[in-house]
Length: 83
Image (tube, rainbow, N blue to C red):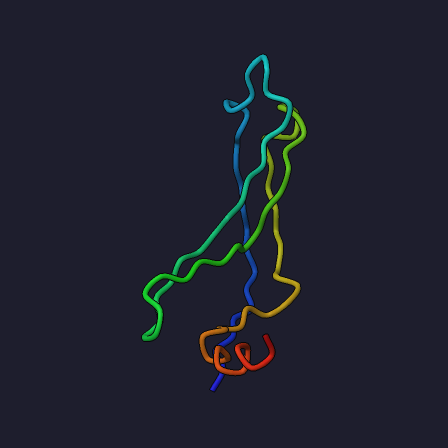
């Protein structure tokens, strides 16, 4: 049995305060952590982006994941065979 997730996100942020006189750009990401019976800590990156300047640091994004997130714990024995 495989567990998979697809999602749509609305992200709004004002990161202008991160830009000081010597900040060239800011890398941001949204991550999720979850537990499974076989692994207590799982982490996945849901979204990331580069904010090139203070002018672009106040934004709103509506996005969906391009690929479904699939729980690889269920496939761990097959992944070991392929390695």
